[in-house]
Image (cartoon, rainbow, N blue to C red; front, side, top):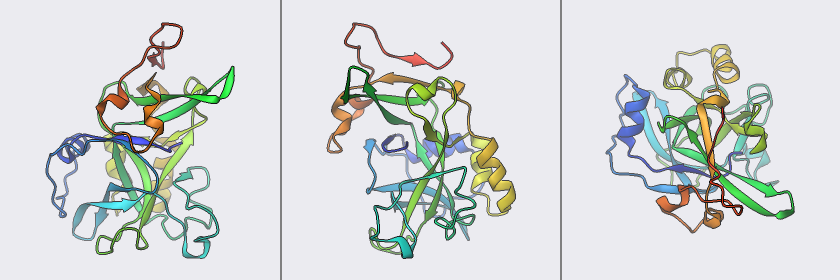
Length: 242
């Protein structure tokens, strides 16, 4: 995780949930973004703090330091356990803290009878509210697409319940801690504490099976997040605390 997610509401909807006091100097509207199948390698709207205020800019999903480019595919995620201490993301930590606005993400679960057959699930907040995934980003608004910019989503270990879906999940922050995460006045020590201690608990989420069409990156549309009925005739919607 996280290898696919949804970002479909309007920017004003995300900002309303965030309740940020700073002006968004890049400007925004509230036309639905309408991306239900965001894939690695595409450009995604990322919220970050610039010198003159908040900015929302498109950024390439995937990043690697210059010395690691072309040696292997650029990572799309970074583990919270090592992202603040390892050398790989040193150029992004802590000054590259950013937020990926989202409405949920997808995970695939292998069929125990046929490991090659995988069932996708959509995971979202039980409240239905927008979510903010902690990220590290090298955002360069002045550059053309894929010219040196990029971001990674920070992941944490899944707790009991969600482990059945995947052993990793995005580090989703509530509005208060999301605002702290992108505050340039927050020290590296305090930011690390937020990352390690303030991820929303598993109990805040619910998940349900969705159609396998989401596996094709060319497929888009709201139908991708609709619950499906399992092969046994049971609806596979699963609140975590059930």
